[in-house]
Image (cartoon, rainbow, N blue to C red; front, side, top):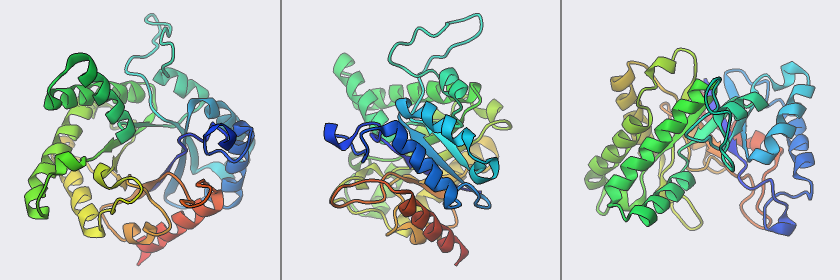
Amino acid sequence: MQYVFVNLKRFDVPRSLGGVCPSERSDEWIREVISHCAASGLGQLSDCEVSLLLPESLLLPAVRHRESLPLDSVRGLTIGCQGVFRENISVGGNFGAFTTNLPAAAAQSIGCRWAIIGHSEERRDKLDLLRRLNSAELPAAQKAVNQVINEEVLRALESDLDVLLCVGETADERGEGGFHAQRPRIEAVLEAQLSDCLADTAGHLNDRRIVIGYEPVWAIGPGKTPPDADYIAFVAGYIKEALTAQFSQDFPVVYGGGLKAENAASIGGISAVEGGLVALTRFSGDIGFEPEGLRDIVARFRQGRSV
């Protein structure tokens, strides 16, 4: 099975207000995006699921519009949220006093299928907050962030959401030197994130899906050099080995450093990688996202797998 996730970060804000949505009405824009994706066949691909991960204000219009389209045209096109809160609503428990936070039960009740958890931007935010409040040493703060992310993963799984869990090393964690010197440090970071963030999830694995998104945080951003195919293959292979040892089953791994037209075919050719995370389809001028560009990225990735 292949998985292509599209993280439409600030597409709820029009360009006139500093966001990247090309329309003043982001709810209308997301409906158009879903219609185009369905019409282009992105919801009918064999063995490939395309999931749009949306900011909270776009979830309901997206889910409602998807439901209005013929089922066959959107069967493989799903909607996901950009994170869930570490606590949840429960019958006989908390009714939902989580102002500003999105409980997993709310995301599921809207109609979300996926939740992205542990994205590098989320990790950085939580790490900055912990170190500000507690002046904690970095390893202790990183451990605490992993534990919070684990709570989010568990709340999502308990609410029948599938999870895209992001992991990856920063430049500081990767360290200096060549790959031979960096390798044990990279493995240690990934092992800690996987072990901590997936604690107590084994009981959910028969009913829910967990996909691991590898984010080489050190390579993300303008002017950064992305890892080559051998580096990605090494990391994906290590993640699979570590999780097979922990859970005695295989986990899908996708490339979370930015699947785009330029690298889709190359990444598709990595046998240990089952998909990727798309952020934008246009990176110059008015940066943005178009369904036509997404279709091209998906096609190139799938062609790479068939070579």
